[in-house]
Length: 599
Image (tube, rainbow, N blue to C red; front, side, top):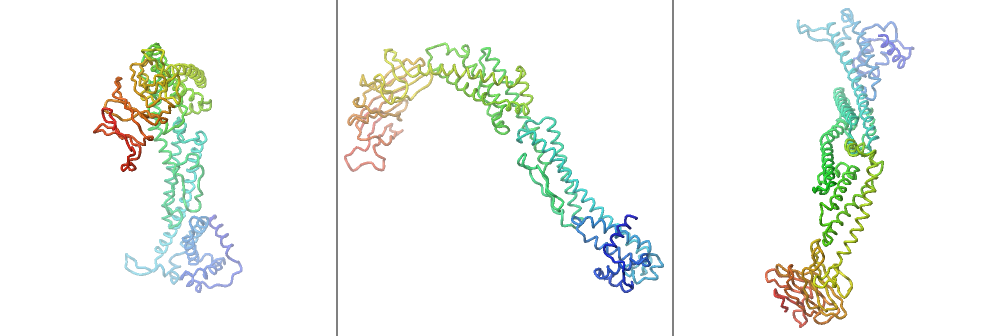
């Protein structure tokens, strides 16, 4: 009561001058009853300021009613301090009035209490009862106190929302400090990370619950502030979103949706990330087992990096050090297997030129890939990987002093592999560039397309090139014959075919493969420097049988070749079909039938 009286005294002093003129309450009451407070309240304050009037019941009641009216119209957000002050003052005056209103007051001044005139439901008589007046005042006091409590609770909930956001932001910031990327956090989620996510989710959930309570209280209080749905902002960019809280004191609540973010992250850790790490462990175990076996010359399938695991790295951790380390192990196993003489006996047969070259080429490619990966890994990369893949890294390098020791060893090893495999490939590539005539080993044929003759021979096409076989065709300018040869894995000829060349003087050849009859291969050679008999079409079988070598004369370079699957005829077009010189004697095309005859 003393606190209320103190507030009241301060309030009265702020609005009232002690030098009051004489006021008659019977003249003032109608003004107050009509709620003309602008005119009536200053006079009422002056009236109550007189100690002789301070204990009159109705003036105190009217003061309480006016304060109640002001109280109900204050902005519960912007004017909350006034709400509390005026509400407490209204309760003070209403309770004081209640204590002063008795039967004597009602009988003596019943004209001031006509608002309480009503029918007694028990007796049916009309009148003004002290109990009715007291009950109405009690209800007003209860309503005011309830509203004050709701306003206080609303502001308390606003503070809780701020506290919830602050708690979530602090935990979230600690994660962004430790991890530069969202996926790094998911992968490196240890017990501490998961504990923080639980805290963030709980703070986010409580924050949302408190914002809903604020909204419900605002609607109940009739406030246009805080009554709208709270704005939930999604955290899409890790380390950018969610780093600071919005000011919510102005009446609009915008909060980060930490609950959903943390729940989604936690779900991903327990779902996708857990599966991802299991796949890493399984492949690591698998490749180490295979590496151990190939080191003891056991022939096992190594293959390449699993597609499904690669997709997981692309999803969660692109350019990952863990991915590089796994691939280094894979390449190490592949190289060991490829150069093992017991697993690949072809390496011991010097006659298998194509096979040796293919093996060494693949091993060199693997060694280069391995070296690129090993050279790209830094000490910082390894430390980051250890934070994200603790179990994998520690189990992987347990036989080494440090992870960097393993990587440096692999850098040295892969460099050595690249060096000796490069030499091996160069040796076998040179061996693979020349084929030997099995009937005359002094005759060598280039197994590559040449721009100019070498040793009297000019290879114009290599339609087949595998470790087991190379087929080459070209021109033997010394013998003035064309040739088609098939060479086996030892690059000795298996069969040889000869045909007439389209001129051998001032040779400028063009050639390419052609469609031809079923079961055969075909090509042409065009001597651009010759005028007559300057074009030959050769058809042969894969077993070394010459179907034909038909020489014809053409006036210009062909623009297209058409092969009819039904008639098995080849049409050599010297002009586009729509521009063929059909009405002149100029040759527009040549047709070679299935037997090699030209027309």
